[in-house]
Image (tube, rainbow, N blue to C red; front, side, top):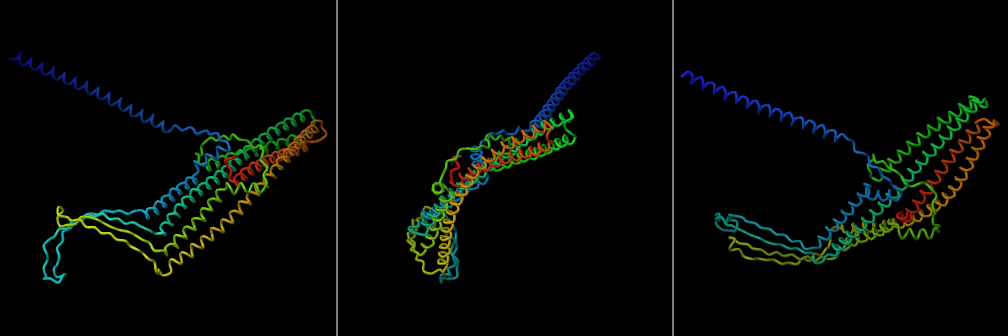
Amino acid sequence: MNGFFLSQMCAMSNAVAMIEASVLRRSTALMVVLIVWNAALVFGEVSDFSEKRQPTPPLKLRLSLREAMQAAVQENPTVQLFRERIVQAQDVADTRLGALLPNISGRMSGARRRFFFGSFGGSPQVSRPLDFYEARVSLTQNLFSLSLIQKWRAARMGVEVAELDAEVVKRDTMATVGLIYLESLRTREAVRAREADLQLDRELLRLAEERKAAGMATSLDVTRARVQVENARQQLLVAQNDYDRARLNLLRTIGLPLDTKLVLTDELKLLPVTVQTPEKAIEVARAHRTELHAQSRRERLAALTLSSVVSERIPSLQGAGDVGLIGNQIPDALTTDNVQVLLSVPIFDGGQREGRISENRSLVRQESLRTRDLEYQVSLEVRDALLTIESAQEQVAVAMDGLKLAMTELDLARERFIVGVATNIEVTNAQTSVAQARDNLIDALFNFNAARVNLARAQGRLEDL
């Protein structure tokens, strides 16, 4: 008996040990899984965090003058705003058209009513509940209304005005971007000029130091040369800042991200220009200037709006009808219909209509005055652009000659300083003349190219640049 119990106890202890071992293995495996899972999550979050923190490299963009103007057409917020105004004008035209189209509606109703017979002169009693069911389709149609027709035509003209206004804004934006692009080129040329000035000043400083070491120059000559170097460095820093700001302004006007690395591919240079007489140039402008076409449509829009108000004096004709089922029970419903024609004759509205007519007549006259003023303005802009471009061409030629003379003056002053017949004051003065001549040439080239843009804008031919 004792052996039996002993064997049972051993078996039970073995079973318990096996269970404990199994639980331990499962617990260990579970812990390993949890550790691996947490590690994966941690490393995944770190990886995601590092990916999120990794900066996106800025876009590098190469743009010519024409490409910059075309990019502004797509990205500039003002251009996009006027495109939305076209959509708005189209929606207004659709609304005006809807007033001329049939208006169809349907309705269904069901009711339970009790009537008081005393309301009809009967005994003071209440009827039993009665059910009413009705389903009906109604149609109304303006058969004739000249005022509504003219309003619809005016709305369609409003769409054309919105489209032309958007084109005007697009061309204005292109011209603005073109001028800002040229300003960026001007500041870039200024940076190059200041770099050339700094290089020249350093060469002259080296020359002064060599002559001092040889006993042919004084400390004052060296100090004066060093002052010129520091002045050139200062001017270079200012020019570089102006260039960076000009590029930021160009990016903003185009509508591109401000961290874009912009590379300007064009150069400030003298280009051939077709000679035009003022009369021929103005004729081209009248054919291509979008503002003139837009103003013509705007004048027509005012006339149509006036016509729509005047047409309210004319009688209008409207038709209406409905058909449907009505009854106390749905299976027993009967068909009923109604057709009518309404003739509306305006007689007197307190003078409101006449007041609106006078108001719109004034608007028509205002648009006519604006048309004449715009034609005068276009002629003025064309003549001014022609004068400016002619003067700018002469300025470029004079500036080129001035730069050549300034370089000759610098060479002569340097030779005199080398042979010891003059101090470096003459060299310093010659350096100043060279720097001024470079600035004159840069400004002349900028004025010439800006005049080209203004002439193209005045004639409505920016696409030809």
